[in-house]
Image 1 (cartoon, rainbow, N blue to C red):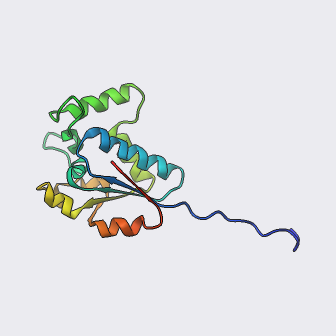
Image 2 (cartoon, one colour):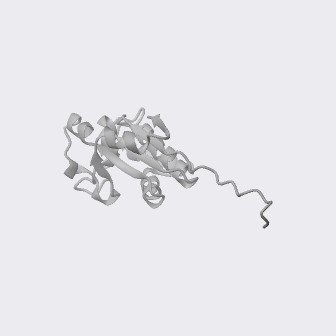
Length: 155
């Protein structure tokens, strides 16, 4: 390299992505995880913020070991284990299941925030969240600060 070579051009860091999950349906929660993990896999910093019904996607397991997200309403199947049936169908078709996406999100460094006001609005307590997810309870100000220079997708 000589002094006449142009200086290397460094691309700007990738813009952060905020995924705002406000719905308590399996389809939207599943796709929020799909978007979050895909963006993280290509190097974008991702914050997944769940509020209102979306908080239910990150509840801890039931007494019988059923994952908390199984209580989400699934399109055309209701909430009585409809999410489990929909998840099984997706996996049969070669689509990543909810548990796989949760694990991938953690592995890829997706920051999971569950809204404190959303929990209250749903009559839920932070202790009901799945502690294995390493998420945090915070407010919308935290979410906005994390995604200030990027974009937000709402599901």
